[in-house]
Every structure is written in structure tokens, then in C-alpha cells.
Length: 133
Image (tube, rainbow, N blue to C red; front, side):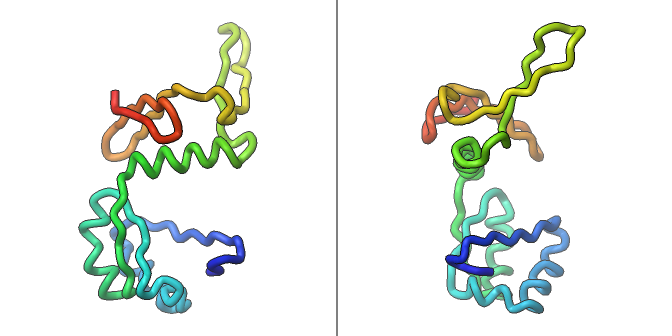
């Protein structure tokens, strides 16, 4: 893991495999990058696994709002990753939909639907202003 070298490395796992993920970090000494640091976490896992991560990795948890993080990430993607976000336009039932790339230009307001263990629908009015609908 390079702090300022411009690389991201992701480790994806189901929380039931948290012990294994922690062991991978320890085996590769990757957890030393985060020792005595605080990482942001969202949702119930931020509360449920806080003590475990502190004890095993000396890693602090900074609890952050899940929907704010989702919105911040989507806005970052819209601004910085060309052709990642798109919408489909159906001109007629006989034709396949046309894919249009989307950027931040003129994007507000929009609806953001987040499907996880539940469903959240947000009306996004600006980069920082949203409300549940």
C-alpha cells in the first residue's frame, strides 16, 4: 500500500470472513500502514467490529454516514471517470435503448436509489444537499 504513490488496493470480503481478511493483512504486514490511524466505516459494522479491529490491527474507526459517502463517491465518479455513469434512452419499443454517457454538467437534481439490506431513495439537489423521498 503506497500512501502517496497513487495506488489503491482493495480487499473485498463478506463480514463473516473478517478473521480471514485480518489474517491476510497481518501476513503481508499491510496493517502497519494503518497502525494508530483511523479509517472511515459506515453502517452497523462500524459499531459491531470496532473493538475487534482496534484490538487486532491497532486501527481506529471513524464512523461516517453511509448515504453521504455513497453520494460523495458517485459525484466523484461523475466528475472524474469518463463514461462510467450513463443513462438509457428508449426512442421506441422496436429499437434497443441508446446509451448516453453522463457527467456532472447539468446533472442536478437526480434520484439516487441505493439497494442493500433495504432500499433508500434520495433526491439529490446539489453535491452536498440531498433528502430521502
